[in-house]
Image (cartoon, rainbow, N blue to C red):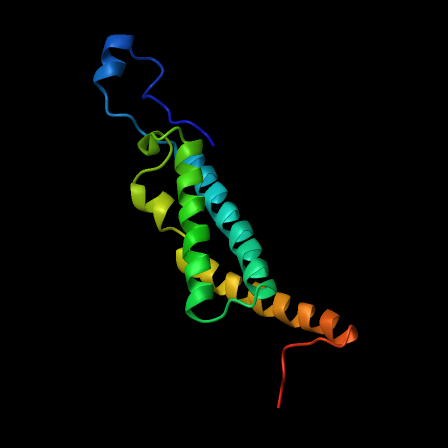
Length: 131
């Protein structure tokens, strides 16, 4: 993660202390990419786990919610619990990418379930039955 800029570099240190800290647009965008890629990766991993364990419906959503909660806590811990030094608001860390990750998790869960079923069918123990 990239840290904030503390104001204009030409100012004295006493004036810089009184300024409100600002975030660089490039650094904020880089930090948002870290959140996006982390959530995407972990939602796919969570989907694979849900598919392998055949968590569907409410249990699959609960698993996704837990994975996203752990991701949010991990990102906040990575920012050393000073979120405003790296992001403009708490919502960026906690909620950003929640819905898009849910779709990725669903596709990964379905893919993992089908792959596991195909492997188990070869062994004569498939559990998915299509009409």
